[in-house]
Length: 421
Image 1 (tube, rainbow, N blue to C red):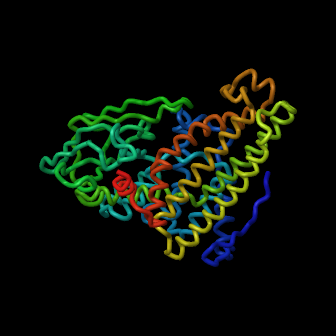
Image 2 (cartoon, rainbow, N blue to C red):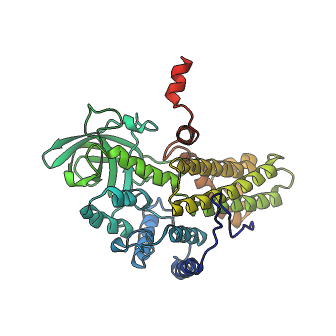
Image 3 (cartoon, rainbow, N blue to C red):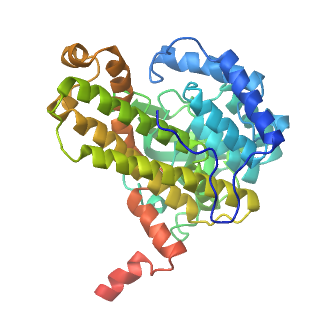
């Protein structure tokens, strides 16, 4: 494993050394995780058995108060500070704890409810998110409204105390296991493009909802299309105000793009796995490695993972001080997804033509052994997921536009096109 520094000095002049209270919190979290982690490897999360075992784990987290440490205690949190939340995320990842299965509810909807929701909505949905009684998915993208999210065509017509929803959502993560969806719909077709949009919480068990799984290359069936045909939604399930859904959505997407506190642990772990993968391959393929400059490229991603670690800590410090830049989340999301993409590409390239083989291949098992098999199962899944990461939460191209316009002050893309014409 690669040795890494314990402290990082940030550009705002602070060194992230933990005081006694932070160290006690870290020790408490580390001890609880060590005593309560499920034994053995769980089945994949995209299987029903694996999903339900992770739901049991989530309930254990909730009962102990660890499901969302930064949420108010009245909803099951610990009233933790930003720093304490980052500490717990780091310890969770370092412990190799199970993948969180209600991440969209936990990281997007929950904070949006705390910011825009009514008291009744918070009491109704927040505890059930943490207990995983309700699994939430996100209904933003549509066939003709991916990166151009404001071009969505799903509509909701007011009918007394209900909205009647018709339309389609695509690329809907967790819809295969979901109970609820927070969806953007157009409630005023005559309003300007970014207005007249409302966010609704919709029960996926409602009449008129049709979920059609989209099996991915890694075999995960939880991705889906969702169709709405005359679905009736009570008006008290509007999140925020009617026709103000764009503002709620941008708040949620900012959280998704900037949810990097602790993510540097995962990036560092992936790079460490890449280094170990390189060692295993070198032992068995000797001088037959596919590319002579691979070591230089591995060193590059190692350096970049340390740069991302510093970026993550810098964002944490700025967030604590209340001086976070609105485009900083886009910069972190772009850096993180590009780094992971390069890391997993390198792992495939290490094996040359053998990199085309799937986990469990007799050829790979006989050649490299059991340790390699365990790494390769993870690698194969993450290789494909790293490609998706360049699309979800806003494509890398969208993030570059945000950085250019909101941070560097460059002209908007449309203005450049107009001038060129």
